[in-house]
Length: 411
Image 1: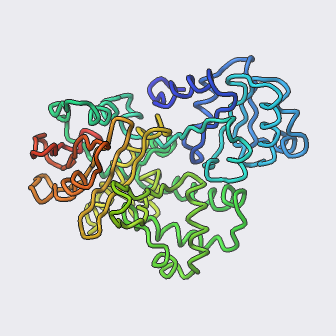
Image 2: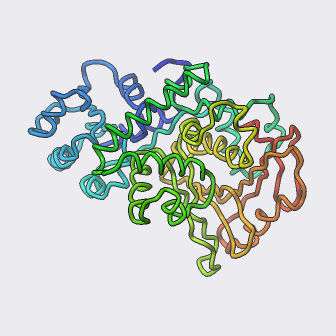
Image 3: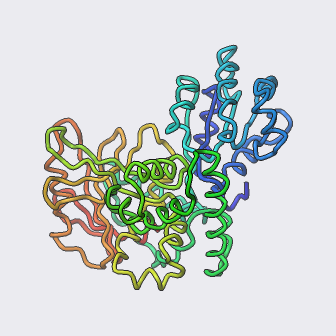
C-alpha cells in the first residue's frame, strides 16, 4: 500500500493473522480492502484469489474445497459465494493453522446469520472503515487524542491545532478514489457511479430486492436523516413503502457496510431510557451526496448543519473503534426527558461522553446532557469525563470532569 496512506488497522490485522485460523476483513466496496491484504502479504507463499474473477467465482461455487487445498490463502470478495464459508469451516476443522485463511468481503459478515454460524469460534472479524482525514494524511494525532480521553489525566493543551474546513472534508468522504478527486463535480459523478454499482451489483448479490428505484429513494431519505434517531415508520411513510420493507432495506444497508445504527447506551437498566438507534453513515461523502450536498457551500446553507458536523466527526470515531472493535463501542444516550449525549465512547477503562457543537462558544447549558449521563452511571462503572467538542480554538475545563475542546483537532 502507498506509504502515504497506510491503514491504522494494519498492525491489528498482522496480530490477528498470528493467532486465528481465519481472519475476516469486512468493509464497503472501494474502501481499500484488496490493497490492504495484497500489500500486507505479498509474494508466492500466500495464494490470492478474488471472486470478482468469473472463473474463480465459478470454482468457489462448484468446488469450493479446491481453493483451500494450499494454505495460506487470501480469498477476496467472498460474499459472492456464501457456500465457500462451509468449505472454510471444513478446512479449519481438519487442522487449525494461524493465518491460514484470510477473507475479505463487501458485507458485514457478523450480521449475516448463516455466515456467523459457519465461522463461529473459528474467525475474528475486523472492520475496515473509509479513511478519516488523519489516516489519509498519515497523522495519528486524532487517534492519540481520542485515546487520551481515557487516560487518568487529560492533556487539554494537545487539543490545539490549525483551523480546518470540515465541510470540505465531509464532501470528500473517505473512499480512496473519491479522495483523489479534487473537483467537486467530478467527485459527484464518482459517487453517482458508486451508488449505481451498489444497487445493480452488490445489492443484488446480497438480497432479492424487487424495486431498485424504491431502494434508491430510501437511501436518499436516510442520508437526510444522518446523526438522528432512526424512526423506520416515518422513513417508510416518506419513502412510500411498508415498514417491514423499510426495515429490510435498512438491514441490507448495514450488511453492505454503508450505515451504522448506534445502539442506545444504558447506564442503568431500570432508568427507562429510549431504545431508538441513531443513524450514521460510514462514509460522510456518500451520505452528503445522497442528501443533495454537492459542495462545502451547500453544507453551510443547510438548517441541519450541526448534524452533518456530527457525521464528519464520526468518520474519525469509527476508524478508532475499528482498531479494537471487540472492546470499543460507540453508542448514544438519551434519558426520559430532553437530555442527550451525541456519542458515548466505551472501552474497558471506562466511559467518555462526547457532545458536538458547531458554535465557537460553550456555555454551562451545553454540558447538561453530560452531567446527567455522569449522574446516571451506576457504581463500579467509571464515567471518566465528558467533552464538548466546539468550533472555537481554546480548550478549557468546564468543571465536574467536563471539558470544552476544539473539534478541529479531530477533523
